[in-house]
Length: 207
Image 1 (cartoon, rainbow, N blue to C red):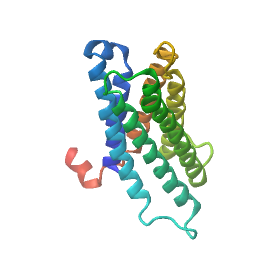
Image 2: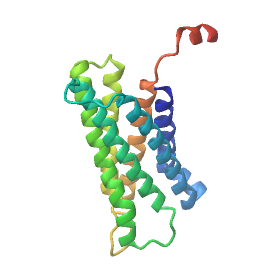
Image 3: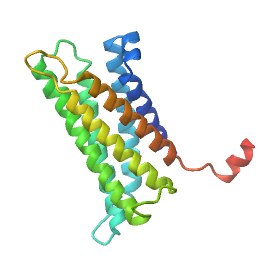
Image 4: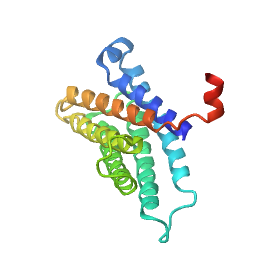
């Protein structure tokens, strides 16, 4: 759980950094795109850990519905992270035409955002069944809804990131950057909340 949370946290920081215009201007487009790609790799590693944890054993017809929702939430999210690997990796290829960029960057990005949204919805269902529909004092509840808000923001970002084939420019660069930045901050907060507490002996050693 700790490695999973740190993976999502690092990936979120890198996505937020990549979406920050001042950073992009300082390091240039190439390094900015590399920042996104490295962040997507951390997302994938964390997503794989989450899938392994939620799928031991793989839920079946006799499993509780919360276990099934948790597993499918992790599985769909992992697919989304792979799609972000494709979209962010494709940006590292120079001289893509607008049509190629839409095919290899925008489409995986859009489908990845949809996967994140579906995963967040399943996680909310699991949390609602475990806790309550409204329980802001529960860390799981807060984490699930922060992921939902982040997924919505990523979806809005994907809309703004569509490339106009006639001009080769983003549909709305500000929306794309702002959606990514807000979504990444939400994912970061959710990852920090999901960090498991330190064992008693670790707490004693640090005091």
